[in-house]
Amino acid sequence: MKEGETVEIQETREPLREQGSIRALLELLEQQGMEQEKGDVIRMADHIDSMEMQLGTVLKELGEMKKQLGVMQESKVKLFAVNTIQKAEHQVQTLRFQVGEWKRKFMERAEQAVFDFKEKGKDALASAVKGMHLTQGLQKLQSSLHTVMLSMDQKIDRLGSMAEELHVAKGHLKNAFLEMNGKDTAKITERNPEQGIIFQTQKVLFQSMRSIHKLEQKTERLQQQIGKLEERQGKQASLKDTLQELRQETAPRQLGKEEKQKAAIR
Image 1: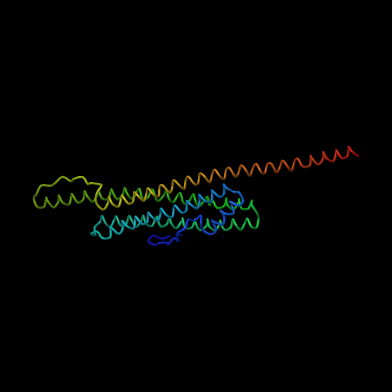
Image 2: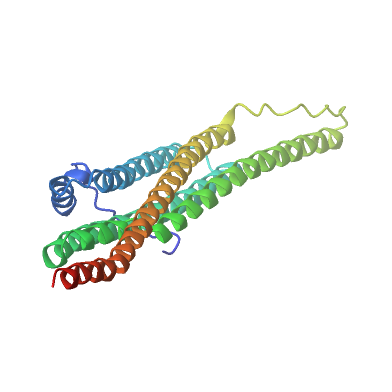
């Protein structure tokens, strides 16, 4: 996605868990008594909804700040602040695009899971639901959230540094003018960091950074939950295979014992 481009993400009014393919899958999992898998799908669907909503709120806040900057008098400070907000907007739009792609794949996998059950049965359904974890996509999304959060933190610092440099430069310019007119120079006062355009821009960026950090934490927790679930499922599958092997090994022995009994009767 190129900077300056905007991507429309189709957001639905109803929760993802209540939409066609997801709802059909959840009903099927309930019918089959697969409560763990059902809970897993619900957690993933709710997380996608949460990300779409929170990133939408962040974009709205950044857009409002850009409007406020738009009506202010032209200056270097304004130009730098607007440019910073636009870059932050692009980063958040890119995140929304990634979430949209993840959501699309999630819904496709849900539809495929229902199809697999109809064609191959319950074991295929369990395997298909595991495939809905989209683990790599989740890891990539968490990495992107972390990168954007760090970038916003850097933007806040750069805004502060730039404002300080301009404040000092303005003071020196004022003193140079005083010297030219034979007047005493004035001591350059400290800049109040909690007022003005820069502070308002920093405040919005900080709110955005905090929202994205919360999303990153939620995504990390979801990854941990999925990891534990997959580990548990792996152990269950291993136990199932072991029991099957034991049955296969003991079957011939039992048959031999029965034949011996028959032979003794004869």
